[in-house]
Length: 251
Image 1 (tube, rainbow, N blue to C red):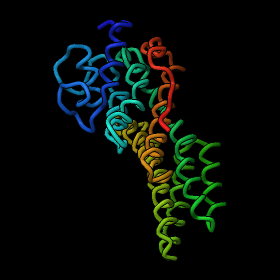
Image 2 (cartoon, rainbow, N blue to C red; image 1 turned 90 degrees about the vertical axis):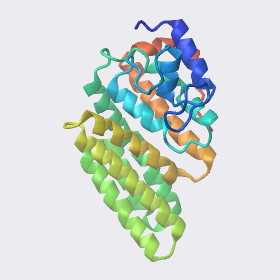
Image 3 (cartoon, rainbow, N blue to C red; image 1 turned 180 degrees about the vertical axis):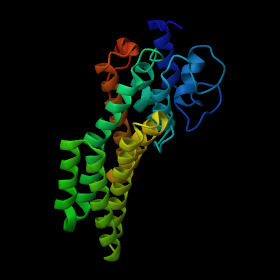
């Protein structure tokens, strides 16, 4: 199916009605992001529009089903990615896309969780910041595994000291780093597992970053925009319609 500006506009408008957690029902405001695309294209209700590359589709579904504060916040955070993904099936180099998503997750997303944990855990702040810096510089599974160990140690120590806040943040950062490490190791063997682990790492960020709904939306929106920028760099066809959805991250 050729993706036209008219179709991209319809996708935007259906998404802007709100997005549900899970597949939902075929009514604007009550569907997940991929079901909204199917609806806009006149396809049967489902979450597998044929115009979207499989790895990108899976990542989108995963981001859709995270703990956004509301259907409106979910739609606001995912509207640009909903348009950018259009027409990617059979065009996007999925192996390169997965490689870039994993690299981006390790270098940019994981340090968010680690530095958030450092802010509430001053005893281990230097170690957590060092682990974040290593992830930024190396972008490897080994760097993530090191970060996970450091965050796990910080969490265990805070727990032993009865510092619930520091323990929770550090534990979230450990899970975050672990998910990205899983993405890196799964990359060569399983495309779906790679994409899944990458977005799982993004989801873990909200717990490490802040408990407030607004902050959670901001973290998830930022990750979605990083994926959009990856698609722009790869010249994904849907990106030609991004003028329909100006950049406006949740705050």
